[in-house]
Every structure is written in structure tokens, then in C-alpha cells.
Image (cartoon, rainbow, N blue to C red; front, side, top):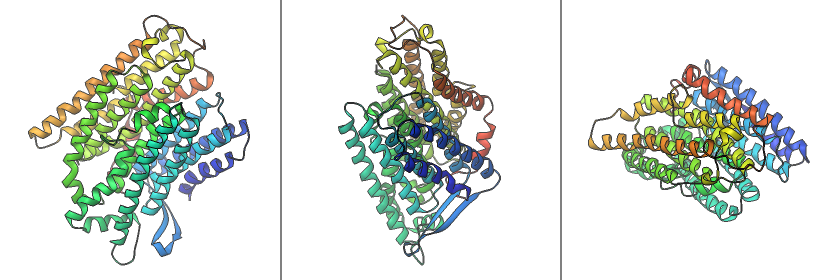
Length: 480
């Protein structure tokens, strides 16, 4: 029964927020996010020793039950969603926003959708929550975004709508192949997919994968992402880059790899090549960026490209590394976006050529920038190192062919390029001549609390990653 609370708390709080005026919606969002985080922490601790499940009849005539299941991977991502949402609400608490009831209502509805995606063990339930997570983000971007929000949001809508329709068609097709009666249960969908002829699995692979590739995003399905990140308000950008990209990668592990194994085997090399192209392409574009927000957006594409490549290499060390890095990347990219927001708020610009001297003007913020940037480039003793080391271990396991060695070389190049553009950004923003601030203050109390949570997790998991490793151990592309 505890699992349903992870969905109901943000869902009901979000609906209630639309009716609350003024600061009440903000307070409700903070309280709701804290309670949800507490429940997700309990679920993570419990699922480590025993699986949790909630199931009830939903639409019997369609062969679907409302089934939620928590294993190590899903509970870890629910914990990440709880932490990130709470940090967003905490740091946003001292800022004004137009129509706060609608804004926080949509944010909480998106959180409910994300929780449902990570817990769903029924394909139709998974799809409903997939849409529930995406639709509020569309309204958040279109209503509270920047000057170019309308064309950018339309592009985002077209990409996600087409991907979602393809996904729905694929899931319906699979449900019709289940033995006996029609069923959307994960186990039945998996058996049905694996029983299909290789030729069927090969086209079904793309029908399902494109929706997930758009969300991660993987080259060449990434073009909506930099503009959407740039035009969205910071809380929405964090939801997109820290959580929704994980939604796509999680779906690959849970709803693609075990469902169409022959299709995966046939197309895996193609996806690995596209992922590696994305790593190098995004890294090279990030190097020439002067807008910090776009730099961080392209760095996220590069990081997700590495995780995608390893996912289709198909070895245990790499899969375990993906799950560890999904959590760590979510924490690190949240910290990066918070710092970018603080810079824009205080200096009135995101142009690195117009910035400088943060170490003198705002020393606490500069320290936070350096630590989070080091974690983002996987410096040892930060959380980013553990997962990335496991990813490259998984990437290096192969047949030693020319194609495999080339893949390793270009993926490794992404790490070097990542250090180049990240350290260049730190040098330009934190040091040099002091640029004039429009708001002369360092971290506020709310910002300090949010950044402190991020940095504590970065350093703790960098020094002692065992709790995260234990939570995700053995949960590789399977449902309990």
C-alpha cells in the first residue's frame, strides 16, 4: 500500500494547488515534496531487503491491472525524484512566480507521473503515467518559459507526441500477442515480445525505442532539447534533465531490452554508434558555447550518450554502472542548473564572456560551482567517478574488434572534451576580473540549504558509494 502513496501524495497535492491562492500553493508544494521524499526513502530502504508491490483491478476487459512494483532500480529512481523535487521546491521557496497555484500544481502532477513511470509493472499503466509526466511539462514550458517558448514548446510537443503514439502502438501490438487472453502485465509483455520472430522484433524495436530515444535524448533525436532547456524556467529544466531523461533510459532497461531481445541484438551496434556520435557531437558544440545554459544542456546529451551506449553493450558491470550513474547524474545536473540560475539571477546574464570574479563577489557560490563541476567531470572522490568508472569498465568489455576499439576511443574522447568545456566554464565564471552584479549577495538561506543537500550527496557517495551499489545490485533490466 505504501507504493500508491508515492503517486497519490504529489497527485492530490498538485490538484489541490490549482485551488490554492498566493503563497499557500508554494507552502503546499514544499510540504508535499518533503513527505514524498520521506516515503521514497522508506521504500528504498525496504525494497533493499524485500520487494514491494501494489495491485488492484483496473480495466479487466482490456486485460490490465493497476500494478506498481518497487525493485532496486525503480526505488532508486523514486528516491532521486523525491530528492530533486524537494530541492527544487526548497530553492524556489524565496522566489516569486506568476500564478503559483498553477505552476506548482503542474510541477507536482509531473512528479506523480514520474513516480508512476518508475513503479509501473503494467504496460498500459506505464503509458498513462508516461503521458502524465509529459503533459504538465508542456504547459509549464509554454506558460512560464522564455521569449521563444511557443515555437520551442511546439517542437517539444511534436517530438513527444509522435514518439508516444509509436510507443502506444507497439504496446498494443505486444498485448495482442500474449498467450491466452490479452494482457499488459510486464511478465506477459516480455514473454510475448521474446516469442516473436526476429523480423517482427526488428521493426517493433524502433516502434518502441524512438519514444525512449527522444526522451533521453539520443542523436539524432536530440534537437528539441537544447532549445527547450534554454527557454524553460529553471525548475522545469531540472525536471527535464535530471529526471525525464532518466525516464527514457529506465524505459529502455525495463521495457525494451528484455521485451524484444532479438531486435536489440540486431540493432544494438547501430544504437551504440549513434550514442557515441552524440557524445562527441554534443561535447564539441559545448566547447564553443558562451551561454552557460546551453553548455550544460549539451553536456547532458554527452553524458546520456555514454549511458545509452553502455546499455546496448549488454554486460552486467555496465548495466550496474548505468543505474548508479542515473542517480549520480541526476544529482549533479540538478546542482549545475541551480548554479546557472543563481548566476543569471545575480549577474543578469548567462554569457560567460560577460562574467567573472565569482570567487571574489560570491565565494560560497564559487565553491559550490567548483565542487559540482568536478563531480560533473567524474573527479575521484565525487559521486560521478564511481558510476562513470563502472560505465567504462562495461564499455571496454568486448571482442577487441576494430569497431569495438573505435567505440572506446571516441567515448573516451568525450570524457576529455567534457573536462575541457567544464573547466573552461569554471575559469571564466569563477575567476578573472570581477563582473558587476545586479544583486549583490551570495547564497540565500534557501539556496544554501538546497546546494548543501546536493554537495553532501556528491561527497558522501564519492567516498562511500556502497549504499547505492547495494540498492541497485542485481536489478539489471528486469522487474521483480
